[in-house]
Length: 132
Image: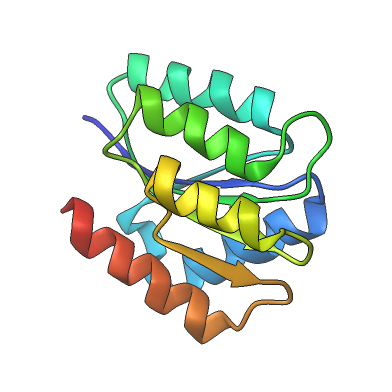
């Protein structure tokens, strides 16, 4: 049986835990929630999940991470898996980075940190409507 996955990518564990608990509270066991602490791990995880027959529906990614920035990561993923809905979280992204992600990664939305739980859930629901 294939799983429908929502993936959260952030270099701060506390943020990953917060995102995961908010999503679980709202959507329960309807989805599988995966996390990665950087873009490289996230990309490997995506490839593994797809190989295992899972559907990655949404990626919620931080922008400011070590190594590769969120916009570059999402653009890279979009080229490989254009069907995945992409959402970016940031406290630091430049307007240019956000614009680039919108154009080149088809970014659904960029949410500011600290995000509002309601805004996050509404954005996820909007993304789910696009893929289901």
